Image 1 (tube, one colour):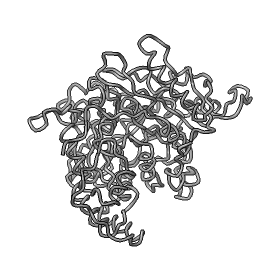
Image 2: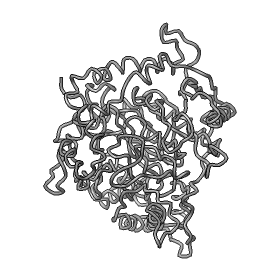
Image 3: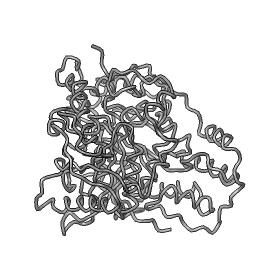
Image 4: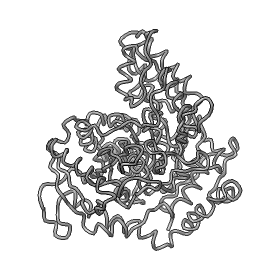
Length: 576
């Protein structure tokens, strides 16, 4: 039996088209503009803390800020808050959320300014939107290390499909975010970037594996961030940083050009302070990828054929022209929400406030016009604890295929997972044992009954049971118990954050089904009277396959009736 998710070393590499050429093409397509805009010479500094794309673009159109102003401002914030304290920045919290910054970011900002202020036209919907990409996204102009010293020479010749599209929409990748090394877990630590600190309580966990993305966006070191999620790695950082974090439907976002963990579960997704910014970012991330290794299959099954064309992709995903059109301030009105109470933690003195915060959010949803009812998922415990992630088994072959997908003559990067393991003995001796576990489990995985049970048998068990809960039907008899639900809701975590994130197993529901899930802040409270800061409490909603429009609608309905987000206390506005 061939490896289900290993992809060949000859995977398609898109030749890099310069950002200038892309910008010019978009300008031609847009046709002129409304005339030049004058940048005010006496403009005040644009506030970057909690800045949104819409607010920034409105200020640009008014001549109150330039692209260079904003890019330089975020680079200044990274310098001031991300590295350990120095004489120049004695009050830095040392967040360690950014691995590297893009040396070409300011030059790109100047290009965008020249075109915009001359024509009054933005090159695309993400014009000068600053993006921090997790350091497992390929970038032609920055190394992609996945947090490991063993990949420190890893210089891909082109962008990941999603990165390429974001740049084409006008976005600027200003740097690469720290991560849990190779995306293995939730500790948020890498040999290249160190351990990422939490943006609210620095001694608390920043989650993982997209820890750097979560902390950097919570600390307003960029406008939006890109993470990846195999088993919870977008939603857990979103939960501990009070962000909106979307794990899209498996197969919606191309996996091409992202350092793999398990292609049977991997997907990229945005982390944002504001849901409209996530919708805008998703617009740029989605689309049909001609690569044979996009992961955009006709069904969730690993052996399903790839969709054959852009038309087939559009028909399958039913994606709107823009996810921003699905945002509705009264999105909760008339919504039907099933609350999976069995996925809430047992009440104790330590977590009662955590549970109270979740329930208060549900009450607010009812007040906004939603029907909120308790529901359960048949055989829920078996679903969440009886199956395993594919990552332990697929990583070995998938990483080798990724490393072999471009020549190493230019950058001298390692070519196989075994070569990485050998290099770690010298470079990262404390990480060798854990890495070798993945090598061992990924060797001859086709003969491993656990792996085989987590392919089709897992899908056949899990998906219909979750679908029945969404449809509000008795799973055994198929009998309707009432009107169907738009989403199911449950907490991301099992209690307040601490030095080790209390992730539980709720995060498995989305990757096991392939359904999309959105983490969103329910509230910010102090875990104890002695806590140095408030910290986020977060809910997750899951919908049917390709129900991202529903998640955006309900999520924005929530954002419109709550004041849940609180800025990070560690990274205030810089004095000018």
